[in-house]
Amino acid sequence: MHFPFPTDDNRIVPSTSFYQDPQTVSPFRPGALVIATLTNPREKFWGAILHLAAEGLSLRGVDVAAFDDLASQIKSGEPFTSGVVFFPMHRVERMELDLPEGDILSLAQRFAQKTGHDPAPLLVSEFLGSAGGRPGGEHQR
Image (cartoon, rainbow, N blue to C red; front, side, top):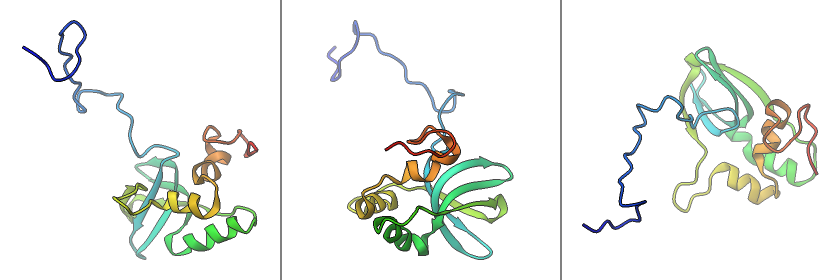
């Protein structure tokens, strides 16, 4: 029998089920760029996860309505400022990874295109340290 893919000594390696692997990495981990839809009041917030727990969500970022203003501020050379916020879980209606959809760029891609900077290190370096910055918020240049 011929397999359409290469195998090692014609052995078939069984796949590991997502549900059986306790060490599967969550896509919603610290440093992930997300868009959170909140209720009471209804708003959307873009940013990087700093911490996610049953109590709530800690993010560093901006309200989606202020996204273009933040990008313009960074592009003009003004210091980077964005809020560090905690949303109690009862306010989090939905959270999605900031990913492109077809020809539509993600907000992170739009930010990089407008500013020339990767948003992830800007958003997390002071808090998570390993995503492009040094502990304590010193950015590598």
